[in-house]
Amino acid sequence: MAGQSRKHPMLRRSRAMWASRRVWQPRLVFWAGAISIGLISVLFAVLADKAQALFHVVIGNDGGWRFYLPLAITPLGFVLCAWLAHAVFPGSQGSGIPQAIAARHLRDDDDRSHILSLRLVVGKIALTLVGLFCGASIGREGPTVQVGASLMLRAARWGGMAQARGLILAGSAAGIAAAFNTPLAGIVFAIEEMGRTYEARTNGLVLTAVILAGLASLGVLGNYTYFGVSKETISFAVDWPLVIACGVIGGGLGALFSLLALKATRRIRRWNALQPLWRALLVAAICGLGVAVIGIASGGLTFGTGYAQARSAVEGTPLPWFFFAEKFGAGLLSMISGIPGGIFAPSLAVGAGIGSSLGLMFGSSAGVAALLGMAGYFAGVVQAPMTAFVIILEMTGNHDNVIGLMLASMLGYGTARLISHEPLYHALSRVFIAEAIRRRRAEAAPESGLG
Image (cartoon, rainbow, N blue to C red):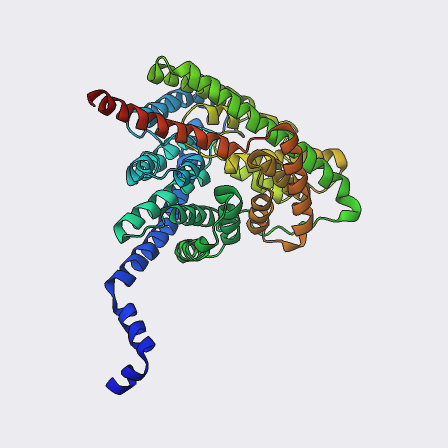
């Protein structure tokens, strides 16, 4: 055996490498981090569903006096979430995807820790659940991205891994994959939305993280499609006008949402500068009251993620004509309020509503129209057409619709680019980058004064 080792030095080095703790420790920590993302995503999903269900139990469905409780519960809940996000969990506000994008651009570990940390994992999950319990029109998918990126960054530090930017990307992709049970969408999201300048050497990290997080999720929930398997199939001979309408109108409304959200967020930030806490709480209260009024006016349809409404549309039940406008308003107010919560699921609900209304106009199938509306609107909001059609394709499990969804997504993206040149998440990420720069300058100022 000794002679064989002398004859094959490469074999000897390989054995030494695989026996080395320095080789195995980072891998084990990374694998554990990816699995934990999948398990926490499942727990988050279950708790989010329970929070929404509890809200509807509280307000009742009989149209009695309890149905008007959101006029008190929702504004107070928004104020509580905004206060905790400002005072206890700074960096947890909003979707969570802009924080993950910003962290990839920041070089210093201390700067990253302000927007990605285990403390923020707890805060993001808890405050998103509180928001859903109060009727906010938010989703858990964006927060899951920040949770995944935070867990993977922490794993990198524990495992002594140096590829922080690649690990943030991997954690973000794993978060999307586990949140929707859409592994391909997680990978495409990492390339198209998170990366923009994608590095080939992160391929292995992203794939491994998505696989392990997905396996952990499947081990608990089993294999499922987010909206169930859609049997509706797009027929181009009949549905081509609907495809174009959903792409162009959906993309235009998606760009409008993005434009209004960015303008409102910037103005609110400037207005809040003089009294950050009190003015932030006032904005949250006003937005919460607006969400409550819209929710009551819609018969309760706009409260929460919008998953049930989107799924019913995909299954062929038309939504009310103006549901998309009501959900659009509730989602916009929830986003600019400053409370933690994502826009993925509410955007899909708005898109399903747009498609449903257009389907009624064109006399088309409600299920087909909802799918096309989701593709066009979502691509318009995030300006990521590949992510839009892949995620909807995996959510519905019907690959016969791939060409139609691709076309609607591309039309939505093209229309959105004509209206709004700033991708929403990347524009919002610059806020966190600017905050890190200001914090650095403030810390450096006393030192330069002492010098």
